[in-house]
Image (cartoon, rainbow, N blue to C red):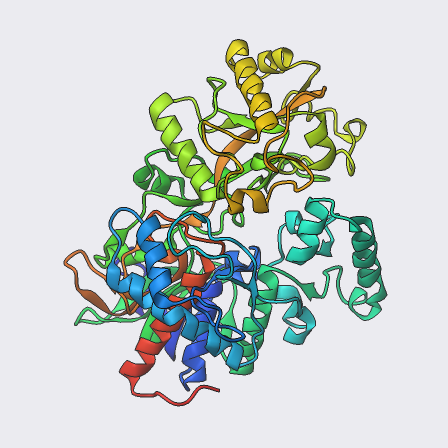
Amino acid sequence: MWQSAATGEMILDNGETFDVVVVGSGAAGAMAALRAADQGLSVLIAEKAHKFGGTSATSGGVMWIPNHQLGGDTGDSREQTLEYLASVTSGPVNPEKLHAYVDTAPEMARYLKGIGVDLTPAAWPDYFPDRPGARADRSVICPTFDGRQLGDDRYFLMREQFNRFKLFNRYAMDLTETFALMMQQKGWRLTVAKMIARYWRDRSTRNVSHRDRRFTQGAALMGAVYKQVFDRGVELRLETKLEDLAVDGAGRVTGIEVSNFGRKYTIGARHGVVLAAGGFEWNQELRDRFYPVPGLTRHSSTPEDANRGEGLIAAEKLGADTEHTGEGWWIPTMTLPMAKASNFHEIHQAAFDVGRPWSVCVNRNGVRFVDEATGYDSFGQAMVDDHLKTGANMPCWLIFDAKFRHKFSAGGFMPAVHTPDDKIPSDWWDHYVFRAGTIDELARKIRLPVAAVTETVRKMNEYAKTGVDPEFGRGGNIYDQFFGDPTVTPNPNLGPIDTAPFYAVPINNGDLGTKGGIRTDARARVIDRGGNPIPGLYAAGNNAGNPFGGCYPGAGATIGPAMTFGFIAANDIVERSGNQRPSG
């Protein structure tokens, strides 16, 4: 037994000790555990949820890995990457940490590839495509993974993706299928038929679970990584929540205090504890403390009530410093009632919907404030900036016409080709989704200045004719156009808002997690307020401050650094333990 410094409670000491203890089972934690185990250390992953995989398993599963050279020389380079990052990052950025990421991310990717995790570059433009050094091949994905390779005792236990990443809330979709359906590309109905037939032909899995054995996007990445984690004997303990950090008399972190269904006990760590428990987006107190415009926890698009900052809170008790805590990884979201679940709501991402043709986004003054087709993080930053200036944002409004309604989704409001108006629940109208016969009537319904909204729509219709948006440049770069509609000319992101009925949905400033957290150095060591490493303590992923400051350079800029600094943390622990050996 020992007494908790935080609460004074007597805590059971089980006598359990591992070489490395990892808190959190997302991308950062999985990578730290995998790399440490691959070097011969005993590893435990402690996860507070009932399922493993963290936010990463519910994500798109993209990693931003500059200069990866997967499949040969891509033409990218360290110098080109640093040129790009120098042009997009702003505010205080630790150059040593940034360089460590740029130098180690390719090594991490090659390591994964070498142990059997398949990685494929995706043609996804950097989020600031006009800046020096930008490219369209730095985002890396993991192809579909057969989830039953994890074993039928674990197949069910990986966190499932949100309904928004599944067709009809059931059938797993990879990114190619997602975009084919999203854009209603030629042959999309055949794609749907094949997905449904493939699922029901898999009779052996249907006898085990309703879950699609095809793990796609974030589930594909985490499934492939966890196959390697389990093959190396890493122990995963679910329903095991971090309560505190154990420290010896010299100030070294020697383990963790956890709780499991009310029972508290300690787990020792000989060589290091890695905090990889996600950010603090579901902790309203921390949002109020750090964010200039806090927003609400329930607007986050990460798993509900999952990332509450326990790792950050525990580290701060030991004097850990923080960095980059003023922003989240923003993404526009909207809210709808959850089907077949009374009194519950579901958050839907609207990352690409806001920049489609035949639509416009306005603040509550009825005026635009951003290039709507910009990267989703930049969209969120613009919402914050506009709200600080006007007090009339968060939420803003997405206004669109019948052409948009027929073809595109607006968050969870599915296109009419799938869900016509007469199939929309009656309690949605004029509460979650608004409809009117004219723009004037719509503006009155959503209580926006009629003259301002009418003028905004008039200007958008003029821009659609010329193909040029003189206010914000919407559709003027390859990133915008990547998510536009190629059938719309002369600008795939601009189309006249002129066909009744007209619609509007409120758009909130949601997030994919927090950008800031515990301050770490280039070796992923936690740094105290005096600028010194706290011995035995590491952090990675959204539990730590990211290497880019307030910037989101490209698709996968959350998971890429998470896995890279999990890799770096394990390497440093292994080096200090004197247990280095060849991988595999």
